[in-house]
Image (cartoon, rainbow, N blue to C red; front, side, top):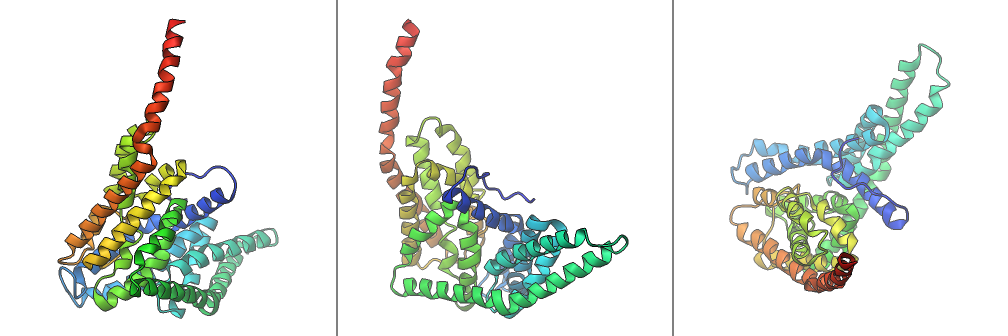
Length: 366
């Protein structure tokens, strides 16, 4: 299975189950990040508001976001469930979702790809012991074709419209938040979901399609910046470096580099899960960053994927660097300040060290 770039989940219970689901969703997105980057660069360069406007080359933007990326996601999800056969039927089935809706169907691809592969997996189990020698290829090909074609029809009439309705409802909710200047409140939902490894599902499944529609009209969208801002995570890691548990401090510099420059936000999620109260820090940082983006009129032309500072700069429209940079800086500062307070500015660590010193001296004397 392709590397999901997320830590392995152990244990049982609701939290572990949610984390595993998020890990599977990430497993469909992360191997295809290169395709998202390619689309982002093409969009940033060649759309009418891009750096090098080109009407002919800009024609690639729509087919990539509308067809290629959902097919890749469904292909990867199918492969995770049932190998190459699952990948093929997942790619076939998602075409029903793509053709049957107008919005980019990332979330639909995440559903129908693994689901179709799972159905084929059970079909293969049923036919394996009932197929006579010499007819294996015939049965395998026809079973895959029938399952893939049938699920494409199901996607066209069932899954696609349902996902479209969910996406429309989410878009209306986001539009209401924007109209009432309440968009920073979205961080209350986004940041906890990110920590449960649902960041890719939220970003690429909900926010990106909405952002694409907005960017098509105005040339940029703030929705691309809600989940991908690296500021809250960087502020949290800085607080951990200065005031966190001493055993964890040596690991934070590398985590900061991976997070801020590599764009792998999953690297800071275990730090929050270790001390759940720190979720308040990333919520505050995320809300502050969104508020700054709103005030400065910032927006991106495409999803910064992965959410690193380099990706942000690559998809920032001309004249928009100040707003983007300021939002990241403010988010980092607020997240750091709140996390430092929640960590007691390291006083708990100092007290713990003071308690262990007499024990160590007594041990040496004995």
